[in-house]
Image (cartoon, rainbow, N blue to C red):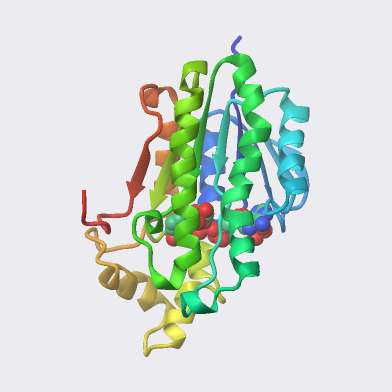
Length: 256
Ligand SMILES: NC(=O)c1ccc[n+]([C@@H]2O[C@H](COP(=O)([O-])OP(=O)(O)OC[C@H]3O[C@@H](n4cnc5c(N)ncnc54)[C@H](OP(=O)(O)O)[C@@H]3O)[C@@H](O)[C@H]2O)c1
């Protein structure tokens, strides 16, 4: 009998991370995830750990929980990330840059560093980091977040180069706007945009975002669509793909 594949997904309790967890469970993985508001649980192949992944202790705790529970890890999805809308580059303080760096970059650095040795020991493994179109499309209102996402894309390439000879594939996905709580929640981005216009939150999500961001397919993405791409990159069908950063944006980015 072959051993069950084990995946660690950071921030898998909402949005894209939650969809990735559901998809990987469906694909037969045992999954370990963690987030700040999660309650500890362990059933039906899913282990959930309450952790703040913007801290070194949180990342270590999630990695330790996975290795303690399963003894090895085959797949890592660095999904955690967050941004705060900015009015100007001039207003973003050092503290805010550092907070963004902790949650968007160091979370991936620390989890990867903690879990790569397990993959190297078995000579196989796959890592996918969730970047953003903003890595290629830096915008003033997400000035720090854009730089952070460019950093994780760059890191993806370096890791893919170093660890390919030892059986590890490392890729990234760069989504455009996806209907997750960061957009749809009462205090989410769409509510903020609606408050500054005549539109309702639903109109912002269904009409304004696709139109203003020139999304060719005319709608925002669904978390499950990103999860499908992540699952593909983790799996054997993607066996000759490493160092890639795949855009999934409904045609928002117009350049090659
Ligand atoms: N949604 C989009 O339009 C979009 C587009 C491009 C890229 N992305 C990227 O996709 C990823 C997921 O975004 P999303 O929209 O799905 O986000 P989301 O709806 O805000 O969900 C984020 C998840 O991460 C957890 N999380 C956030 N900060 C954390 C922390 N410090 N420690 C532990 N867990 C934390 C959250 O749980 P708790 O709050 O309980 O901690 C939640 O489970 C991010 O990297 C984001 O940058 C999103």
